[in-house]
Length: 281
Image 1 (cartoon, rainbow, N blue to C red):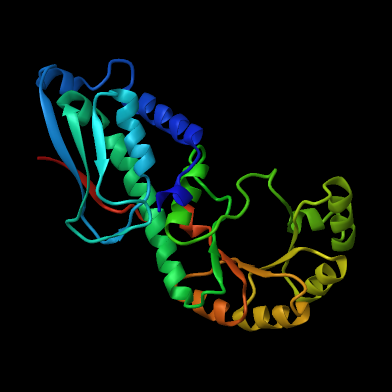
Image 2: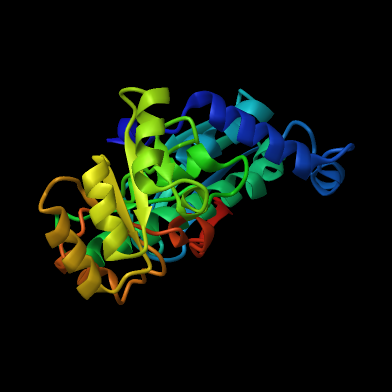
């Protein structure tokens, strides 16, 4: 199950090394080094303190793999699994200094990424329509994009562009300089075979995007009624993506209006941390 949710190995390694460098500073874990003898072993449990959806196990495992390869991390739950309060997610065993030193970094990854997965799952459930996919954006934490997008997948969402190199998205600021028809033509001439999406904030622009042959039309800051009109204008010529201020209370209305995709920046920039603890056994 986890294979579809795993972020790239290099992205995990880079994020973990940066997190540990930030947390260890120049001298390491002064408290643990002073209090815990070097030869003491320990065993600890990752425990969910609240209901949610698990994500970030690869990063938590890498924290201990990097700190001390002799520490073992075993998971009883997988990314994408729904969690209950009090549920044991996994165990850590080995040198107690290493376990305690890696605790906060491992929990930071687990809590944040599980929070992203949990909020995504809530949007998927609230949409209430299998045909409407919940999509993330590029509004991600610098350095954590690949991990956050993996967490979105664990929550049942789908990914937008991973980078500016993945597709063409003609936005409002591009259109201040270049009309839709010209923008689409230029994009196709420069990048043949690449998906071309056009952001529209009016029904007139939707008609222009259809005439220009856009592969995907993003309707921005429209009401559900306006989205339904945009869907009718396109008549199936291109999928419709909704963006702009969609909430858990409104996502079902946008899905019912016929949106194929609903993009929600909050999935990655505003997801509450899921409370997960590491308890010594």
